[in-house]
Length: 154
Image (cartoon, rainbow, N blue to C red; front, side):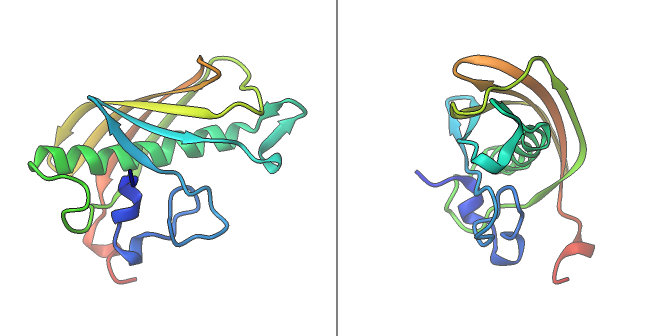
């Protein structure tokens, strides 16, 4: 199954974290699993903070892009639509909060799970947890807003 990011319009598909048109990026994909959103990513060697552990900036990026992808999924669901039925709405991050609970081991697949806390107009609030080998190592909150018209066509 494709991630919501596969349905972003081309002009909004260049993000380092989730842009399908960014060959050097992370290529994060976000999907529904029941009432939760899920993204999975296996860190590469360059995502090392120190031997054996993942760089915190990667964790923040995963939570960030998972949050905006989750917002797009939530907006579609709220409108009674499904991914792939036309271009996906594009959101940007208005606020990102990340709490690092413990060091994240480098090696296992990282799983980000999101819960939609609020959908209100152009704003969606997503709560996220990142885990490695089944252990939650970070929590975050993303406040995402639908991309402003001033960013379209730039």
